[in-house]
Amino acid sequence: MPHKKKPRVEAQTIEQAVNEVIQKRISVRLAAKAFNLSKSHLHRLVLKAQASKSTSNLFISQISIVKPTAESPALIVLDNHKTHITINVILYAKENNIMILTFHPHCSHRLQPLDVSVFGPFKARYRAGINDWMT
Image (cartoon, rainbow, N blue to C red; front, side, top):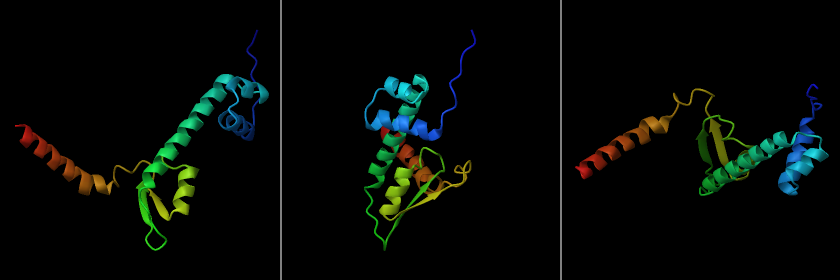
């Protein structure tokens, strides 16, 4: 007997199902049944959403140390990877006078000014100091 494929589901329906599981703490099994979704697929999407949320919350907790003002905003330079820029991070930055500058995809290795001018020489001198101290 051929495997029966489930009909294609709208993105909004999937988002509602993920929100039901995360916010209302409904089991994945019940949400999958209620929204006519694959349980394993919904489970993967819920895990991904939770990881994304915790990543952006962690990032926000790190940048909240800086206290920029409207007269003296902060600038954060990031590569353009999808895990680094989330809507929560963008909204937080906008509300807290933080400007985000992203490098074009696949060129951050050419544009990492701190690695070349600050961290590279620092690491080299640090390693030399550790080697001198150890010998």
